[in-house]
Image (cartoon, rainbow over all chains, first blue to last red; front, side, top):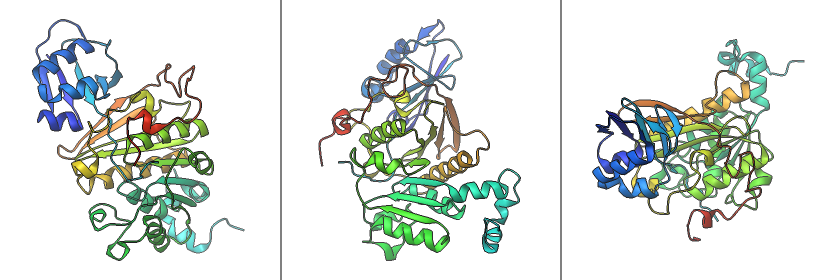
Length: 88
Length: 269
């Protein structure tokens, strides 16, 4: 089992905080995200274009990082909220 | 002759008796220069606690005006400030709390033209702005001026805090090399925000500023703190500098400020 933990807008859109995938063999993060995209359509565009950060077991990772049974993958979007400082 | 007045020794006595702060640390705080980007949701609690702590000089850049809808979270301002410049309202609140603090106001927009000269005058930048072009502008300017950026951001019920210290840890671009397409991630104005959330994130930023000035503890360099207020969940993610980062990497390709609206795909206002 690999747990995909969702943060901020991923979580809001998917209406859940995590997705559990029954994947036994070692998989690259990129391939894992394809599975997530196909099973949770509400966050498909965010995964494809959202430019979010990926962490594996609480450490920043990339699409090539290998994940295995028991690992936790986190999808962390950039969050811009704060004070309105209109940019020119 | 003592550096402190008798009143200051009394005012800061709860700091001074902490061995980690002491008179020496309090003097460091009183000599520090901290720049707040915005006197809004994140800037409000940061400004109030930094002023109370006796930070010597607090710079505030904000050209916005206080609106009734700000009062749900922007605790620097009150009903009587509606319609005033946030910078001026912030000045008055800080001065009423601690007249020792020198407040420097920039009632202007932060731009590629003014950012470098403003940043140069400060030790630490506290970033609490609300849009991606400014986040990247602030990041790049901090790398170029070698300033530590205490970063906070919020979305509805979630917040993120980290410290970007040039050469010692990653920068914003190491985490998020590119911004999301305009419109994909809604702003607080569009998505809403729990009013107390910036209170938590802004005060965490204030703690990091004070630790950095005093040189105590472990600052959030190379770590991203994620807070979810609905679950009361604090998590950390270990970060690392991207050696291929276009700004802070080993062979940077961006050596001057760029057009950040174009970079973020945002049209001019």
